[in-house]
Length: 214
Image (tube, rainbow, N blue to C red; front, side, top):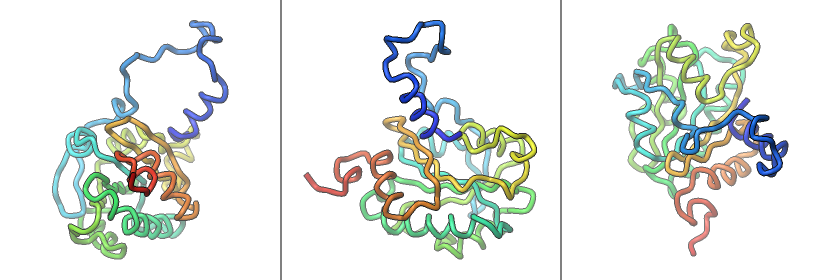
């Protein structure tokens, strides 16, 4: 279950915490952030650069749009990657380097950095482009990949389904590391709907959130 649905359900089921007995819900640490659960795993991007996830992306306090992918996918991946390419083109003028796109492979034994770069080239991310927000294609070993997936809500409760890469969800996890606002969006939504939702969550300024200059 993604962040957006989880917290929406929390709000619907428990609209007023004052009406709930303190023993009926698991206590949440008062200063805990959703991003605290994201692991600092080692990864390699499509350019062969080695990074650690938290050090590179979480501590930068930027906005992130994250999804899972694998290059041999014949199902949802090509459509999702094409959607991200459109989002990148449309959001970059307002967000610039305050927004980063991250696609990490769920088939790391196949998707080497070289393979990921070839795949990235199809969608305009084979080379850094200073006019567009960064888009990195990432790989880690299988245990670390699973750890990252779970921290972001990109998993299935059924273990058999969860380990079948062809069943991975075509979701975009959107987060603002400064405000700690997060949501999950189906990549199949209309691009205009995705842009509006992403702006609300990822935006740092009024103009980024609403597309209007005050």
